[in-house]
Length: 197
View 1 (cartoon, helix red, strand yellow):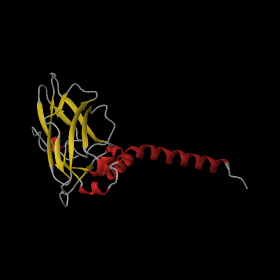
View 2 (tube, helix red, strand yellow):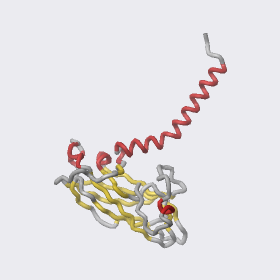
View 3 (cartoon, rainbow, N blue to C red):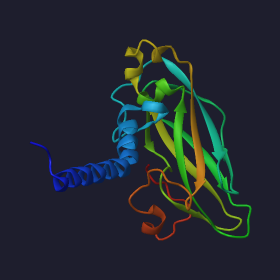
View 4 (cartoon, rainbow, N blue to C red):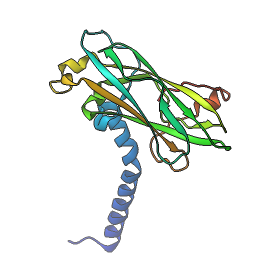
């Protein structure tokens, strides 16, 4: 007994609709997967500090990039050596050298990628749209730690250096994850918001 043309059309339409839903869900699901697992050098957002601080140290380097925006962006310090589990505090600076406001969003990752599951941020400035005014400069903080659990990873425990890299994108062309609300708008346009991301 064969399928009627109506049933075949309904099955085909259902399959097409399902594929469309999966296509739209792919980016958020992939981003969530990376955030949880640290895959591809995605760092993790911590909700609490590390439970212990170990003697073993790692050096963290800071990298700053811009993609499709005229901003000037740089790290304000050189490498920092921290113990596993110890909080580190780093600052980046972004400057708008133009005579118009620029709307941007920052993304991040760490290299080597195997460090992703162990690099935790307690505070950062990623995935939230920022409006940088004409001629304005801002200091942007990052509070982080490298999880002590890294010593249990046969490969990652051998790392001596981790690089934390941020890139600013024009928010009009950026297609990645975003925070739900613009922290600057919630803060009434505060000059130097520190938004988790």
